[in-house]
Image (tube, rainbow over all chains, first blue to last red; front, side):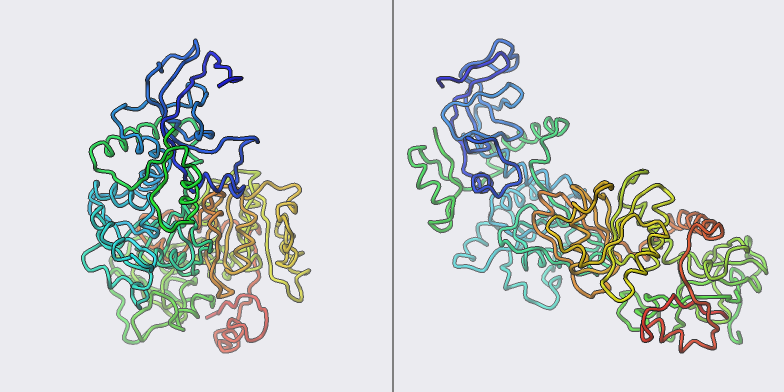
Length: 311
Length: 311
């Protein structure tokens, strides 16, 4: 902490835990369209305990647990100093690994279920990349509202186990991409309504499958492109099927009028996590093991749970 | 007219003129997703004079000029009998060829400029297929509202003349597709703001060019696919550039709450046509010359003006 001055509006936070998210790696790779001034510290979300506060800080005290909301850079360090307004105080009985990871993936899931199409109990959504944490959260958050989910996953070793896992979380249907190579994809929906909303984090053929499931007038929201392939759409999908294609980026929610709303949503999500109604797999690792956590996050060791660094 | 009974709510109309639209041909080809019961008479818009009315008809009298609004099938005939509610009475000083063609192409242009993005004077739109009648109407209707237009046309013999023609209508910029094979397409916009709204009736590369011109958060509306190629979009266009892709189909405006609004828009468009503020090239042909008019409409004789049949 030498050399860092805690100004009157600043709060010094001792970090407790912070995850390695794919977007953190993209930022370091320089492929993200927003870049911090260099040199910079990585990490964009996490949870910490307030160590000290500046003289003009009003709502935070030493010992409080806080997370940056909206997400803020430089979370991969032992101590972080940022203005009071950056920090959102949370309940200290939150599981530390959920507190550290709530502002990026689960908030993405909750906002995407809410910001594009008005869904009611009994409605249905469709998504690809369903085994991702965002995907798992979508299944659970939808289920809590009585919304059904159709889930698309890759064909790979272990896809049967993945199906079981997603069904335990509340997924109504889980298909591998190859199962969907049928003439009329909607014949597979025996007991579910056609979905009005779809989520795409893959692109390519997998995005086309989401589009096929959507009902007339439906909306597909793209929030990732894991296959690195573009999205291809027929003219008739727009004209005759009246589909809308949109995008979601958490960064867009940085404007102040969205911050309070998002913080309320975070409190709700942490409450669900405490009650065991929102679950996803993580591995808490010591910061000393950063290198192996990084390798796991980069996919060098096969499919691994999200790595959450403990400081 | 033998065998057709004029019921109490019916109106018998002697047709004056009706165009051959591409969508009429698509209906006959069976590639349109809505099909009339067979046998059917072609033609989906036109203008006629009321010949006789049923006893319960209240708002129309013999001699009135009427057009079907929303568009209605069976306009390629000398006499047409339909219920009063189908017909919209128009001013008899409307040029017959404009009255016959106002409900499909010009209404598409006006609605697309209005239904998706709120535009203000000084804003800008971008479109491909700009030489089509919809494209020409978009240029003129935008210009009347002080909205600039960037127009994309095919590379072909006569593209210089096409550019001149569009500029005379009020186009700010007209580019052929090959002119847009540059590193940064937006460097071409020296005096125009980035467009918030784009129109695509081509697909393929031409649609990608519309997307490139759009500003952050912009919307592209697809209303045709003349190249028969799909639309391909990068993941980052959705996530980082926040583009929205939508579709427009006039058929969607069939619901009753849209009918009055559309009829008011038609009156406005016909007023502009009478004042010479809305122009597009047409060829009035006798119904006796149907076969050559059909050949021209099918593109068998090169680029030709829209064929409007006189009865």
